[in-house]
Amino acid sequence: MTSGTGAAGEAARDARPTGGSRAGDEAPRPAADGRLRGARDHRVWCEWAWTGDRDGTPEHGVLVEVADGRIASVRAGVRAPADAEVLTGLTLPGFANAHSHAFHRALRGRTHAGGGSFWTWRETMYRVADRLDPDTYHRLARAAYAEMALAGITCVGEFHYLHHAPGGLRYADPNAMGHALAAAAADAGIRITLLDVCYLAGGLDARGGHQPLAGPQLRFGDGDADGWAARAAAFAPGGGHARTGAAAHSVRAVPAEQLPGVAAFAAERDAPLHVHVSEQPVENAACLAAHGRTPTAVLADAGALTGRTSLVHATHLTDADVEAVRASRATVCLCPTTERDLADGLPRTGDLLPAPLSLGTDQHVATDMFEEARAVELHERLRTHRRGTLGAGALLHAATAHGHASLGWTRADHPSGDPVLRGGRPREPSREASDAGALAPGTRADLVNVPLDGVHLAGADPARAADAVVFAATAADVRHVMADGRWIVRDGVHTLVPDTARELDTAIKELHT
Image 1 (cartoon, one colour):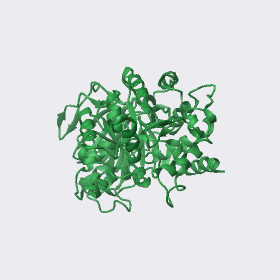
Image 2 (cartoon, rainbow, N blue to C red; image 1 turned 180 degrees about the vertical axis):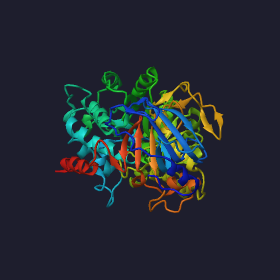
Image 3 (cartoon, rainbow, N blue to C red; image 1 turned 90 degrees about the horizontal axis):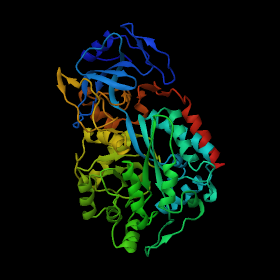
Image 4 (cartoon, one colour; image 1 turned 45 degrees about the vertical axis):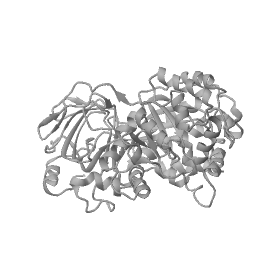
């Protein structure tokens, strides 16, 4: 961990790197100054670090001090102190996976070949959904979230609609499946925003009529928006790692007259509101037949298009839709690996700017935030025949601060503390900031370390390391991950779920046998 050349190498050699605390290591330990340091207290010196600048320029020699799970101070351009752990390569803030369906992980490698469409894929997905119960869902989600941690994801937004038992019967605890997901995230050492999904109809037919829930879909429904709200309001996840938000599955699954109730539920709680929007042209056509308006317009009329809203996919938007999204400052959550796997199409990403963008792995074709980030720009190049709409800084913001903000991990202001120091000059922090997703005082101490000496990044210019990792790295290049001040990945191994591959294999095969 102390290899390096030039000034970085000299600074690294001057340090005496420690192993860092493990996720389960709670005992205080003496620091160099004799004070006891808790399991979430660290001094970490980063050879290079991207602290959150929009242009993606990394800082050299960045000392990050962590106290009680939060970043206490950040100083750039310093030599490594003797008592600091040294991280070579590039260190980034933790990633936020803003759109996940954990049980879809059981479909990887089983649905990609052959013909068909989004709609035929969906039938396969329903068959997996019908086999899960709280215990099997917990085991699958725990392994899926551990895989996310290995990829540098420290927070997940779980778009959760698998609420009830087969046939729609309620468990003794109507939120048993939600509790299974919250427990799985805790077991994997990451945070979760459980986006409780209102799902009331089986779809819109070509003439605009809503179909009743049937088959596996019966597990998703709560009767109406009031029934959904009553159950969702009763869910109270334990632990500081979990928060709740609201979601309407889509205009296909929530009739227009029910949408205002979902929007009001989120507004009353100042909670995030996520919605699948215009993923497929068929959805737009059916919505026009039913309402004479696009899905985006239907959401706007229902009060569901605000700065707290995240529109997932938003692939097929009209000019009027694009203007409405920009005006509302809603976030657009893009999931490129899923959108291309399901042949959804290419979103109008450049047209939507400056609307905030976030990223999700959705059905987990791949669990790789570098791939999702670069695909946003590369897909836009295919659509427009132009390069450079989004640079590394903007793409990293989508993967970090914007994703966390879209999931409700925000603060109205930074706690008091030293501002980030660059070259000895203080920079005042923003008064509206994410609670995570930046290496800045007061934010949650989430670190993702990517060495530059692996085969994917060999020869990269360290001063342009952010460009290198965004456009060339993979999840396999992540070496260490800290979440809330605890190391959850060390040397590419999950500290809480050491054999993640075996746990995934066991949980998935259990569902397919």
